[in-house]
Length: 341
Ligand code: NAD
Ligand code: ZN
Image (cartoon, rainbow, N blue to C red; front, side):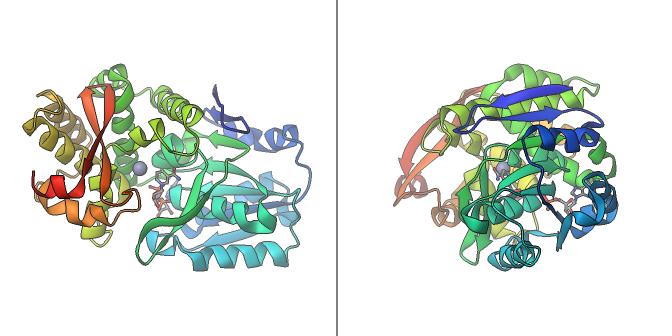
């Protein structure tokens, strides 16, 4: 078992290990939470683990809320449904929400926790690789609006994150690839050794998840509210979000990030902003894990879509580029300059 401390405004632990879910009741007690628990999950995860987790947490006293799966349900309507259920079940400020699922459940349930009674505590139990290494840590919660992804949300840190690798046994291979997009991202921006570990054969998934969480925790501790350093976690994301949008969300987030990293790195190499060889290494690694190549996507065609991304303040844009493999920097430019580059 590995435990990583996230030094946010209110610090919390991320516990990583096989079978750790069985310690959830005692971990919740240690947080001093003895009241009602609401479990929020989606239909797929609920079908697989809903009964087990509900029984583990106290059976019929648990308020169980199941949402539809899929990015189109990461919406204000879903949050409203959850809030109504919490109110029907008379959850109070001192009660607890458990988000059981992938990044969508975590983002939606976390946002509901931030809103309900102006903020109740919540625990993240991520069940996808992507949620374990990324979305469950750091306190970004929210939903999509018609104008774009994650346009409404709140910073609301969980009290605890429990990553149990056993959940991954049922995760479809395509979803695993999504998680790998973020894993490779961490290696690229902050840890060359992680990239070497990924390139060599063999497992060590617990260690890999823990390293990713450590890197994320580090960025969150330095810049909880995403005004500087934390933006480096967006490597591959400016173009990745544009690819998600251009494909009508047919290309899922993690895979879009994989393509985004390849395209931005190639683009930066061609302009002398990143040393040659980095893009080849990213391509070899994303290929190794069977991720989409996205050959038809070109940076030049994506800037315009990216310009509507919320991360662009006015016409200025901060691109995350690689200094070398394992080290990154923010490159400030404008959309006009990019469109003419
Ligand atoms: P997801 O939540 O849609 O889960 C993927 C699919 O796998 C779903 O169909 C789900 O029902 C299913 N599933 C989940 N766990 C399973 C399991 N153990 N066994 C079988 N099936 C399982 O997608 P995701 O990739 O986990 O998360 C993507 C979302 O996360 C996006 O909306 C993205 O914007 C968000 N995100 C948020 C942050 C953040 O910091 N908050 C960071 C990265 C991504
Ligand atoms: Zn991401």
